[in-house]
Image (cartoon, rainbow, N blue to C red; front, side, top):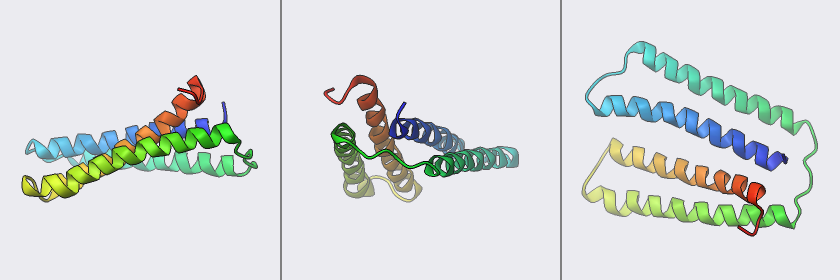
Length: 137
């Protein structure tokens, strides 16, 4: 498994775990409930421990020299970045042009964060698919 593919797996896993916990707390608050202090501390602990693991993994991976990127790596990166950019722009158009007329406040903030996270998951998910199935997919 190449370094870029490995990092993409770690990043997608971290995004899903941390922002899944965030979405859970937001869902509890949206239903009118208030998360207990234990849920808040647990969410913070999960987020910080995953962030620490990603930082440790990045530090350990940075100790080695990265392989130079070849044309396959560049093609996979460009294709995944282009698709993620389209997802991000669609989300930001929804958040900036459509939602202000019907929603406000925290709904717009949560939707913007969701668009950013979705674009990152698409970006790194397509990197994984590009390395697994080949760059011609």
